[in-house]
Amino acid sequence: MAIASFLTRLPSALTASVRPSLGRLLLHTTMASSPKIYVAVVGVGLVGSEFINQLLTIRSSPFHLVSLTSTTRTLFNHAQPLSASWKSDLASSADRPDLAKLTQQLSALVSPTQKVALIDNTSSEDVAALYPTWLKAGISVVTPNKKAFSGDIALYEEIVAASASGGGKFLNEATVGAGLPVVGTLKDLVATGDKIVKIEGVFSGTMSYIFNEFSTGQPDGPAFSSVVKIARDKGYTEPHPADDLNGADVARKLTILSRIASSSSSSLPRLQSYAAVDTASLIPPALENISTGDEFLARLPEHDAHFASLRAEAAAAGAVLRFVGVVDAVNGRVRAALERYPTTHPFSTSLGGSDNIIMFHTERYGARPLIVQGAGAGAAVTAMGVLGDLLRLV
Image (cartoon, rainbow, N blue to C red):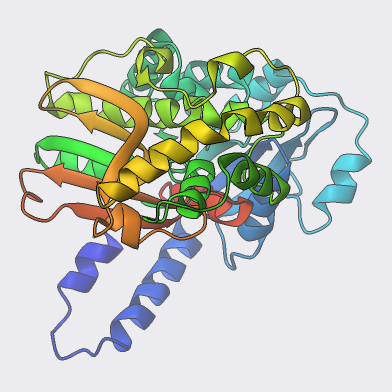
């Protein structure tokens, strides 16, 4: 019996303080008695390093960290699981990355009593292209990498088919909203027969910060260019802010959600890739071909008056500006654009910093949408989302 199911059957006399303790005990017992799970990590940057550190804090864990791969080195040792000294162990390795060899090594570990999971913490399309191969070999894939799930639909469908045929599982919660339960929530809604009406939200932590600061419901405020510069200085944007302002990241996330939701809605378009999303870029046309982030920021003040007029018009209407993504299952449209929302709307009142907020409008959640909100970016919460997915393999 699943832990959650067991807890719901406990006598109501058990207090709220007892139930969580029993839940932790059952989870600990389940992990201690579950089959061994070999874990290989590809990508050991900010998110990858944080994930490894979080993984190694789990006590009595069935997880055995057997492989690490960076851009320059790789390490494989299934006889002696890697530990807290993993950074120095990897740094001292003389082996170069070889994903074909790693595939063979991991495939050999798959058995009825042993599971294997590959954690892809990169943003590489080349790594994503290997997902079907790994899944067919019985290797589960856990990843925050959006490329496979928002790119060419042929790859996406191959991944789904490979997993459905009895191979490994793919888990990608962290591809939308970092550690927020967005993908899992949507999958549960669809799997239980709810009908998706609309999904709308602020999906980009960068865009969230920019417009939380720039548009507060007042006609005046800081210049758009200064807010973007501060956002880059704080590390909220890519080195080239145009990579955020073009809306592509939001379009990728919408593609992921639309593909999941499409199984419950025949009216949604079959997106060939994220490029098919109706995306309204915020890059001024005159700056579209600027090659460096510094030059882009130096010229962005030339367009402050345009953004200031949009803010003033919104304020006059009692609204704020927010860059949102919408999956509209009724009208069969997926779009990302700058929109107005009343100052009383949750997109105005509930957001702070670089928060994400996503509303699920469904038949069951009709009068009041289901809302998921919180930090949607950062190494710690993204790694948590990846680790949470890995725990689902136990």
